[in-house]
Amino acid sequence: MTEPYFPIGKLVGIAEIGRMESSAPLFAVETTGLTKRYPLTWKRKVLVALDHLNLQIRSGEVFGLLGPNGSGKSTTLKLLLGLIVPSEGEARVFGLPPDSLDARRRVGFLPENPYFYGFLTGDETLRFYGKLCGVAGAALDRRVEELIELVGLQNGRERPLRSYSKGMLQRIGLAQALIHDPDLLFLDEPTAGVDPLGSAQIRDLILRLKKMGKTVIFSSHLLEQVQEVADRVAIFSLGKKVLEGSLESLLTERQSTQIHIAAELSTEQEAKLRQALGQAGLDSAAIQFQRPQLSLEQLYLRTVQAQSEAAAKGAPKP
Amino acid sequence: MMTSLYRITVIGRNTLTEAVRQKVLSVLLIFALVLVGSSVLVSEIAGGLDASSLFEQQIKFVKDFGCGAIGLFGFAIALLSTAQLIPQELHNRTIYTILAKPVRRSEFLLGKFFGIVLLLALCVALMSLAFAAALYWQEQLGLAAVDAADTQIPNWQQNPTLVSQYHNDVAQIYQQVRDPQLIEAILLLFMKLVMTTGIALLISTFASSSIFTIVTTFMIYLIGHMESTAREFWLARGAEMSIWQSGLVGFISLLIPDMNSFTIVDEILAGNHVPWSHALNLLGYANAYLIVLLAVSIIIFDYREL
Image (cartoon, rainbow over all chains, first blue to last red):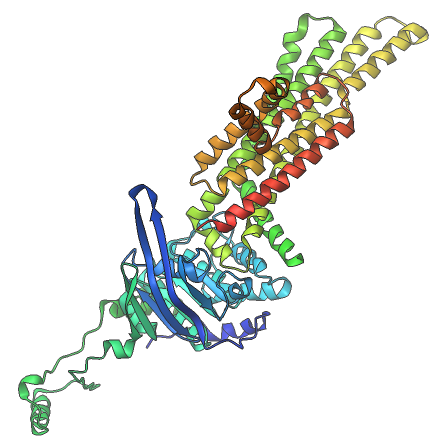
């Protein structure tokens, strides 16, 4: 297991910023029959972007929204941020209407493919958003320092955002979403267009936020990553939620069992095991022995991280 | 209330910073060059006239040209900067990040508006400085010409008639160049630009593109200039017009600001006295109209789906 990228200790100071008491209701997000229709006047049709969504997300959960493009994920996020008004139904964020200022004080948002203001530097961007949230003075200075370090943008803080790479933009986007220490984070495709190392860093950050008790709701196409961080997921298709549940309940195959042995088996040992399993009443045809394989992502991350660690220690490159 | 004002200020300052860093102000360099170039040119063209009318023509030209250029450059800056405010925010998705924070839509819109007003104030101030410099240069040329004409006779200082003429000529130059009414004219020009910004902002709250905002604002601007003529016609011949015609003129008068009322700037430039009370009345009218424009913009923007 490699060392997590984001230093956990750096988030300790966050709670100092005037946050609301979280005498929160049980659910961070609750929707009942939430529906969004767009009338297509010229075609005399109505596009149903979201169809009667019922969702309950508990405080402290990491919730993944999955689905193809146009399935209603972004519409759901926009409705939960009060950026659009539902055609029917209701959404509540910590028991509050999503467009209320009190709800927004507790919410951070990273939109899909953000550009931000290209003329501002990383530092100025965070200060701008901090001031909008009422964070000022020494608290803002401290917060900016923490977040710049947290997302690893020390080298980019004085550069204008127009010179940022996609991964850097995503990281400054995460930092601005966290500037007022929100309890709930909405991340729309946080890893889109980011290289595997960058997206692993974002995954680490989500896990870190979870440990801090934050609620994270995110959409992603990278299913393996969702699997690594989400407690529960909902799968959307054509504006409808078609499946919802904890990963464990959804992914566990009740018809098979895996035994993990942290050692290489010899042919002789394998034969003995087969024999023992047969004696336990299992059909020999139902027993398979396989060497587990790394995923390509795991291999990539191991290689790249080993390289950068070696470079950091000053070791010669191979 | 204070936190709301603070957020408006933060957004306004950011809008100004954006315009400055996107080098909007460099447009003003062209203004300065055009102004200086034209005043040099006019000094050469008007060479055939006698000294005093030559000077009067030059000053009139520089004043006309200066105020005209402030109006034109200001109009371009006001219209283009305002028209792309909201579309660009939507394209870059920055609006989502701002409105996801504890910021009201009205605060966002007012912040953007005041940012553009600040930008216009800065631009008009800088253009006025260049304008003042051009006038000062003409004044120095005028004084040099008076010196050359009035002080050629030896011992002219002992001749009371010549001395009186000299002082008279100098006083005339000062009167023409250092006209306090120019401040009134520039203030009115600035207010007209702010009105243009208000109109463009209102349109951009429901427009789907910058081009639509630019074209529509421009049309309203033109109609606003023709409106007073239509109104006079209406008042004079109201009885002869059909109910539809009079209804239309009445509707337009109510809906579109009377931009022609700002043509009193031309009166000032023509050397006619326009009392401050008249200018203040006009500023009051413009401000009242602006408040309505902003209120309607806020209502529309509040309901807009983003």
